Amino acid sequence: MDSPLDFLAKRLHGKHRRLKLDELGAFVWALCDGKKNIREIGEAVKEVYGKTAEPIYERLIYFILELKKRHLLTFK
Image (cartoon, rainbow, N blue to C red; front, side, top):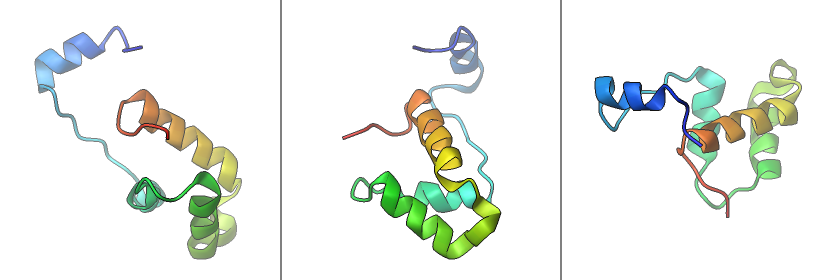
């Protein structure tokens, strides 16, 4: 379901909006290729970011759900 403010955002910014991601978010976004599952993405995050990304799977699931909520990805 869209946010009540989505109507206003679409009127102000058009159909496309920018989403500013931090380094970890951009890394995860690049891994969302439709082929990797959450476990594989989590392993790649752990390999590159180590303990600084902990708790990896809690953060990853929250991020993925936010992307889905914004209609930026879908689940297979």
